[in-house]
Image (cartoon, rainbow, N blue to C red; front, top):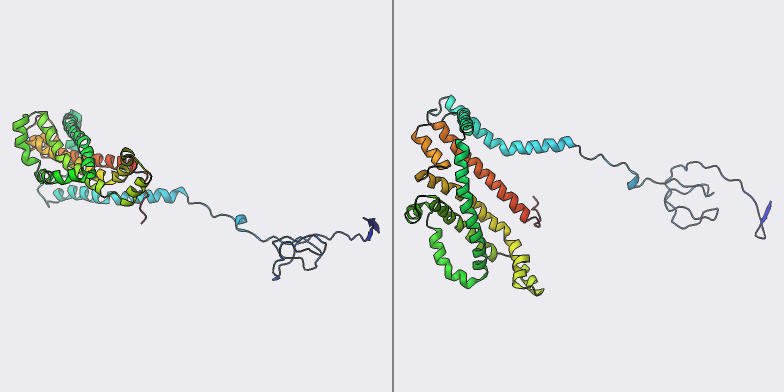
Length: 330
């Protein structure tokens, strides 16, 4: 017996804690007093004896073990499978190139196996001819390509933004667009001579039109909603170009730039075949005249590799400049 707070109470021995048996009784609501006067926990099963014994706590989602994350091996295998899929067509082409002459399907005098072409390519690398000719071609190609980009992109933005200017110049631009660059090669040689100036000018002419027309199209196809929102914010014309027109036009402009990159190499090689003393076009033409067929194909393969590498470089620059775009989901 003990007296506490002026009232007589009986001391009851503390019950032994034991796990509550699993029952189908619904859990007691939070805040409901137990037999001892203390609120029962909100989770778990109430004690069947009503003595206030602690209820069993149900497992929650946070207490469950998480499944292990993906290992590195599947990702490596997936990357290897993707690379093999992308290069399968090229490998098949090289294999057919190697086997067709050896099995007599084509005359190996005019189409030697790829292994012989690779040996000839390595010989050109060793004696320095390939490096000298490739350097001459790249200087001409990149010079003309850079001038075309520097001139055509601002001019295309101007023509695309001001419709009266576009209506005035469009007939003349269509005439030049449909005039082949190689058809004007004799004109460039007559006016500018047979030196470097005529070749670079021809590359500029050939590269300017894809960039110019794609830039004009890019400006005209900007989302009108973006333009209305920008004007509602009272943006000035320079800020409108910087924040809306240029970012929205980047993908289409780079489509024209990539086309111009391919055109610059093709047109230059054709020009070097006609009148040049150095360059990949000159190397291919001289090898044909000397009947050095493996060296001729080595020059052709070099041009293809340079074109693919240049295109991948432009793709990387485009991704860098348009990183704000949301990638398309498949």
